[in-house]
Image (cartoon, rainbow, N blue to C red; front, side, top):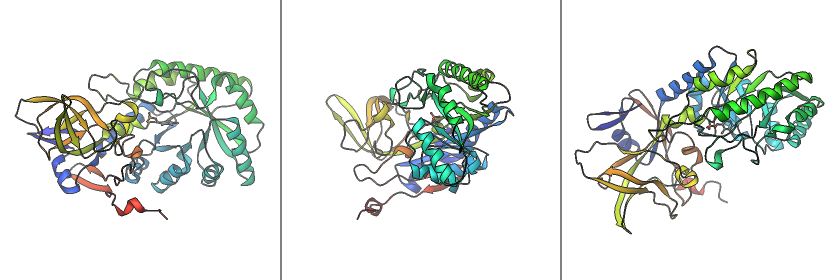
Length: 411
Ligand SMILES: *Cc1c(COP(=O)(O)O)cnc(C)c1O
């Protein structure tokens, strides 16, 4: 939804320089149409099959964005009590909320049960016991799926590979059947599904296929043991092309390969986060200073690793482009860095950009997922605002934080 008209870069029908003027920088900007289109791709992939598309709201939990997805019929994939709270507030039906996470506390479990969420994606037997006990106390039944760690390597950054042997996630693939047999003995547990989520920013179909085949084997064994699985939850993890040349998978490609592995009457759950929201959002920032030091060019912008931690945390790449086309052919190689007192605080390294002036604007692209959501007030920098663009209308969906906010809750 980004395109140049003459020399100006637009998001939908709004000039990005107008957003910078009106809301200041740095600021996260989202395209509603892109969110709607990305969700529609999943709907098509489900292709009238019964199931749910549960947005992994940890990727971006702004209430207005959640509201858009809830209205489109999405469910929510949550990882904490706070996320369940946000999703209910944003209008998601509790019957479409699934809840994963290795460390659910008793308080969170009770909150989820009282709100009657669709199911818990259970990651250990101790967690199962806790859920069963709390459900008994509340005279409720808890619907569960076990999250299975299928031991596949999705070939992504080690911090976001979750289905490999030796990660903290899920129940070991070899112990899955036993776990279900155990769950069957629990009075306040209803076995509803099976879940796997092997990682994030996955660009290759093979790990999905390998994981799905292993999960299907477990389902068949469970059937023999008299345990019926209603939902197969294949997690999220589809990657996007952060670099233009990258090949990535579309939801329908994932569906066409993976869904036929399972019995056709199974209900399917997708849990996309990044592939719904990453390329719908961008971080607009301003050049504060330029300098040449140690035989390198540096452009210092007003967005830092507290606003966008992905480059520092995962060494991840985000395309960075000026929002005005320059007719100067003179290009320089430069690092684009933030103002934070850490050498790891960079937005991009060794980029080739046309010469920029102080006060020019740069767009750090595809930062809608794990951008604002992972931001902090480190260096006592107030949280950034967020703006949602719908055609020719821009709406502030989060105010810029203030200095006063920095003191909030301090006693
Ligand atoms: C984070 C997460 C997702 C979403 O991952 P993406 O890579 O953003 O699609 C889905 N399911 C679970 C359990 C997760 O933890």
